[in-house]
Structure formats: structure tokens, C-alpha cells
Length: 73
Image 1: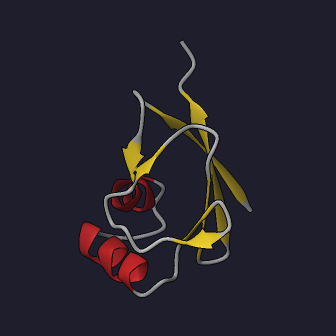
Image 2: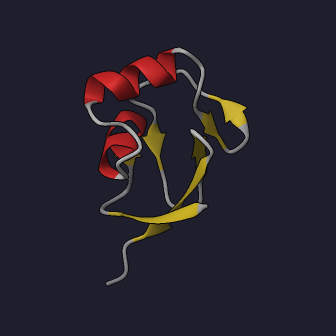
């Protein structure tokens, strides 16, 4: 399943994105998943907890795909 997520401003941190989409229950859970190499950004494993995610990027985690979009308006 693909989740479309509207980014407010220029970016959202990777750990915050996983929490905001409900794929992780807490920031700690997001940090653990990222550190364990379970998160892919644009097809490549990314272990940077606070990596800046921008509209146009794709994040894959736990069988879900998140497509980042610019906030309308």
C-alpha cells in the first residue's frame, strides 16, 4: 500500500515521518527501525535518523511505501 504524505515546509525528518504516518508508535521505535537498516529511502537503506525527507522522495518500511508530496496551498 502507498501512503501519500504532504510535507509542510521544505522537509520532514525521517524519524518524524515514520511516527506521523503511524508506522512507528514512538520516536524511539522509529530510531530503532532506522538504526537496524529496516528503512529504505528511494530504494537504498538509510540509517540517518534525522535525514531530511523532501517532496518527491519515497520511503519504504514494514511493507508500506510513503510517497512525499508538497503540501497544497
